[in-house]
Length: 273
Image 1 (cartoon, rainbow, N blue to C red):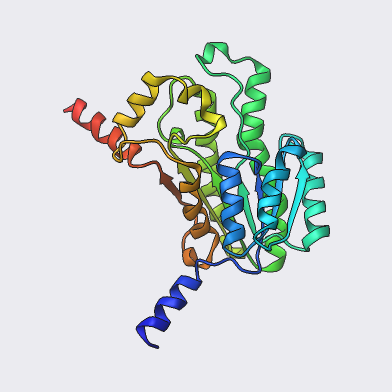
Image 2 (cartoon, helix red, strand yellow):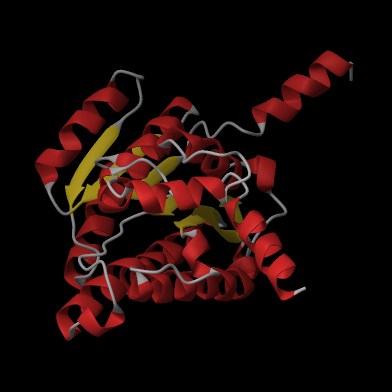
């Protein structure tokens, strides 16, 4: 094999042609970017969100790539809606090869003193419970067909609590452990389970933080690359983890944070000295 042929062969492994990808929270921000990226890489796409009209613009963009797309209204906190999402996906495509658990919610910013039971249930239900039960349902499909890839969208706050989003940090820490548990148990079925951990990213979800120049400055100053992320910068990591290019990688969290976590760790080590 020539060097040119080898290069083409290696690059082909980053394609997901013929795969069907289900993305939750796919109407905007990171979820929208991931959906468009997976379609460009060759996958047909299922988009899920709590509000169906929000998905239409993303679906139209995917259709323009020539790939098939299905939109489904689903709140992942509700198990019957998860069941209906999976049912409609199977009726349309007959399989699910890639699952991206991206749906997220954090209705309260501030002290944990301000968290009531409803807020706790929304945060844990969306960011952890929903991901578990959707992974369980899709994992059974993947087991029956001989494998698949699950990618959870976590956060750097899974490893270092973030002031103002304490319960969200708890949920993301749980998601990291869920990633490891599913990877360990489902590896025997050729199901790979990994996560990405975005740093502060310019999305509607992070608007309240982006609107605080002091907080943003602190984050930027403690990020090696000296800036916040764009949603599109999460896409290549997901394509890598969804494709054959990462065929021997499972149970991992790939931080896509511009070096923020590493910088903070170094700062803490220096302070301790």
